[in-house]
Length: 198
Image 1 (cartoon, rainbow, N blue to C red):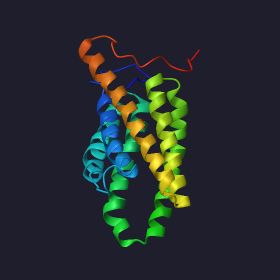
Image 2: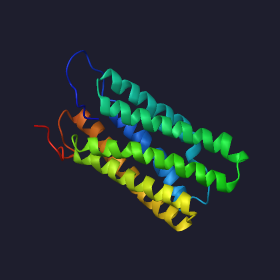
Image 3: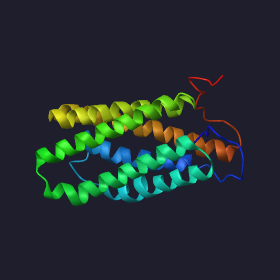
Image 4: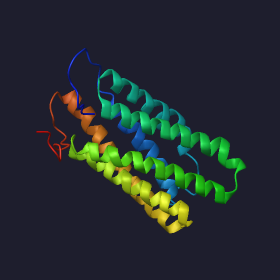
């Protein structure tokens, strides 16, 4: 992931492609369920703990080592999101009433939509691909918390479709990071910053 602070100290390999891939795959699995494509299976749950959760959280910690505040905040936040959501689905939701689950998940998604909004704004300083990830994710979260509060399956399905799009954009951005790294040059384009620092 591009860093806003490249100065000082030795750096490690870019953990951004791993973080994006972990986010993309777990988002894809849950979004496919939300879209009604998976017959209600919870294939996403294990990956929420180990790939979207743990691997993405580790990517965030490695971004701290690279002095990348944006990457550390984004991956740390969404790694914790998946761990928290997985814990809720596995250990809290089974003992709660459906109305309470909908209310809980609505507030969780609303809270993360607020965090995502300022990450979206900050991503305008990085590149078009990352901006697209956070833009589609913002739309996904807004649709899903609206669906939870309104009790609307149709809105939840639309949120699932947009979530799949979010995953595809994140996979593309991850692929760009991997392929450009092994190529030693920028082959897969991600675009420049939408807003440049003067």
